[in-house]
Length: 444
Image (cartoon, rainbow, N blue to C red):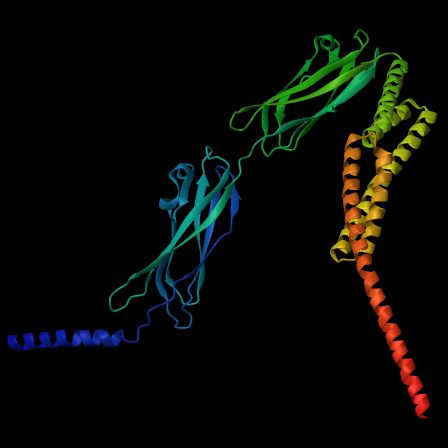
């Protein structure tokens, strides 16, 4: 009996591998890795959970083959240590089993940034791994796929600013109203907001200012006014600064200053107007000096400044006089520009004709250019820059003219013998024709 059992066991050992091979002969093994899509770049804030979505698709639909197990995980080994200290991994790994052919599934991984994380962009590496379904050699892992996504970390911060004009003017003895606004244009609440007013000593006792000490939410605004009594203050210019202090959510102290100038004017405008008239007259004199040197651009600028002052004072006759001078200089500047461009074009045309051996046309064009340059020199010869420019251009023209005249003279010397030879040939041909004609007549 015992030998029979041994024989049967031996037979099973021989048959078992054949049965296993036959059983798994038709088993289909996947040959395509899962298709991986990852959520695009997003943003988050410190202390908030941020979800990374990893979408997997089993592409083995044609062979109807499942994947036994597949998972996605945050690859912390590839995150720099200096960044990893700011990132808390809430959910590091997510997986799916029996991943059907053609099936699509989304796995979620979760991270959170600490309060100490600096603002900026972080790269989060993801690794997708898995194992094929059971086969004759057992389950084997497939090559992991590495992908990454980006996360922008935004830090909520308060940013307090002050809206205030740069300058204020008031007639001496009157009360000046100075409206201003304090606004939080940031993304977080500003705590312990306090306001101080820094002014010159002469204004300190005469300034009425509100006390401000409060919190200021994001986008919130405070509208207030300052009042300055100038009854006992000397005329002149004074400075005032609104000084704001506040604290961020991380208890960081911040400061914002906004300053302005206060002009306290005399009881009348006569002195101011007289000063403007004196300045305008001085500008006219400066313009005349520039004009005597043919420095048209500088003269034009001074006349325009003088015109503005005369307009402010309200002297219409002087405004009209300035306009006439401005228009005249504008026309002169335009003429210089246009004639210079025209002369340059004539010169270039002449050079082109010269290069093509058309010396007569070249001479005509260069002479035209010289005439324009000479006219421009006469118009601007008191300006050294213009004078040097046009004298140089005239010299260039004269060199070209001398060369062209010599070329034309040489051509004339060649043309006379040519014409003489042609004339002799014509006479000979005429005589031959007469002789030939007389011979024909006699024959008839």
